[in-house]
Amino acid sequence: MNYSKAEKELLLRLARSTIEAHLKGQTPPDPPDPPPALSEPRGVFVSLHRQGRLRGCIGYLEPIKPLLAAVQEMAAAAAFRDPRFPPVRPEELADLHLEISVLSPMQRIFKVEEIEVGKHGLYIERGLARGLLLPQVATQYGWDRLTFLEQTCLKAGMPPDAWKDPDTRIYVFTAEVFTDEPEKPESLTQEPKAP
Figure 1: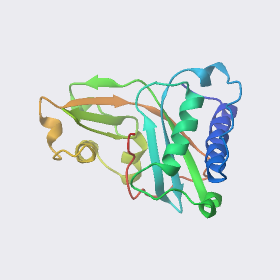
Figure 2: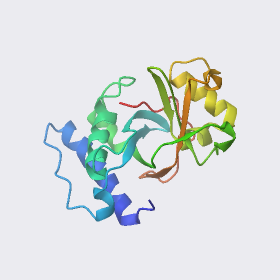
Figure 3: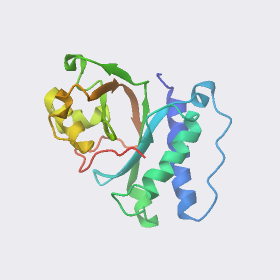
Figure 4: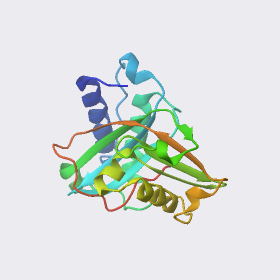
């Protein structure tokens, strides 16, 4: 992936202007004519942080839409439709920081030793249960591989050792993560949620 500084800034500006438009009751801005890299379909998550705490996070696991359109849609979803949080209020906007995680394609693994904490995110599914944690979550909490697996299982609503079940499928992915915040938040109080 390796997006340029200008491309990252464009995505962050578009995400923020989309949230601002919703708060004002206006139609979100039309995405500009994108550079080729931003018109490719990508999985993407938009996370909102306020005062070092997660304030909303929703995304697409799969490359369903062109990246610009997906960022715009997920920015609005993270701000106003994450069921764990009340909708963002206008007075919160000034100290709201945005983080965008552009996902690589998912790769199924069969040996947990393949998981590299700090590099990989995890997606675990069994039957209708599924859970995802972005790569930066394990780093921010200081988790090792086992804890990362257990927490992803818990996120999916499964027992923490469900990753050992042969019916459980484990996928890894990487993410290019960028933010408009000068420094990363020290900790997250809650983890991301898929739409």
